[in-house]
Length: 116
Length: 115
Image (cartoon, rainbow over all chains, first blue to last red; front, side):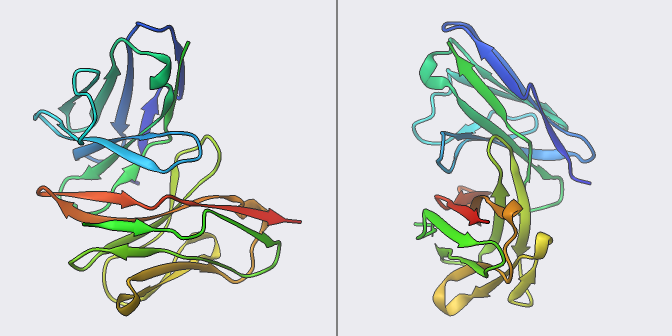
């Protein structure tokens, strides 16, 4: 149980285009989802927290107009990287917290974004 | 402020040797503690977690961790390392920040296993 999927697993896009990454909780309802970014050989950096039906809360220094997060249902959150640039290339990981659970997050397998 | 420190960036051990990965945290309340493992290009896999109760926690793949409140530590151990254990290991604290429980990750420890 508690499986989180991400799609796509890898994506290559051209500079200036937008790309959407989906995060789904497959067997539970996720009231809260988190989006992380991980640079090579570094730790995970929390980008934003999203609650179903509400606007996402972004961490300090994260551009909300560049990284659009939508959490329209209890099983789906999306991250859209708008007008992507090479410096946006990174590993993006989502996690989800189940309804009624205060603490534990379940992580997706990650999405490797490469901007050329 | 909440923080997690993993003092060892790299650790190299021989296969069959014992392993201890250190994790220290700073958090004002009772912490919720986690250890994750990440293979290259992969997501995070939960090894074990501590919420309350017995301070010695057993996890998957033969790992265990001990919560020591007096030392603010949650070190990960394994009695005999296998070559497949080579990976990146992250310690995390679940902390309430701005009304939401978030994870604070350590910087990670990269484990190399010698045959």
